[in-house]
Length: 80
Ligand SMILES: [Zn+2]
Image (tube, rainbow, N blue to C red; front, side):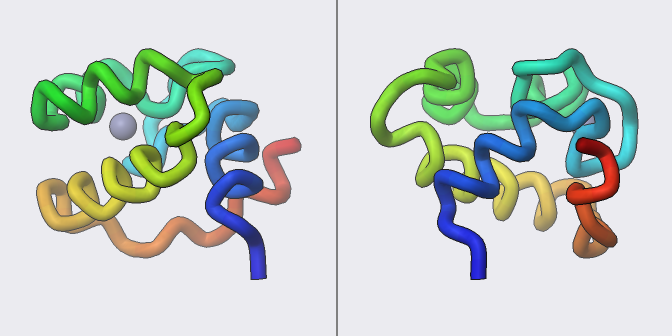
């Protein structure tokens, strides 16, 4: 079982967003997903080095899953 911090770190390193589209390295989401987030989460997602980032990241993923009806990502491990 991965910790929220590990998941968030891997997501930042990955080149695909939770929606499956390409995203920039070291960015948590692609631009489209980013702008779907509520303002407070957008702000949190810009602070990738901050302490609570991992928790906000999982909150943002949950939000986007509901918003986009994203199916669980197969695995982000192969991207590294
Ligand atoms: Zn996306």
